[in-house]
Length: 61
Image 1: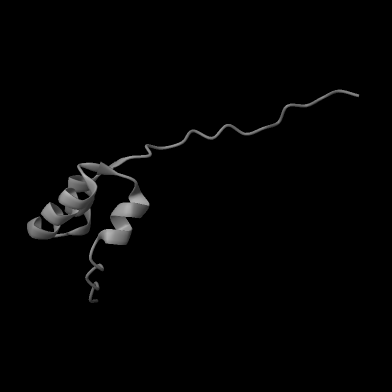
Image 2: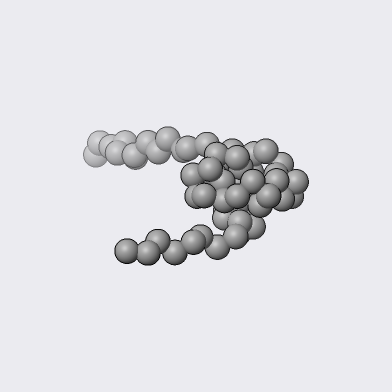
């Protein structure tokens, strides 16, 4: 019997995300960005940034 190696390769993305870039992307103001940087530092995991960021503004249609 042959052994088949058919595992898929997963290339993980960056574990640490830039807090300033996240704030710019989601429209978070400079005062709130400063608070996040003070709390988390300049780089942090995405789930930490999302948990501590203010809720997103609704997009009106």
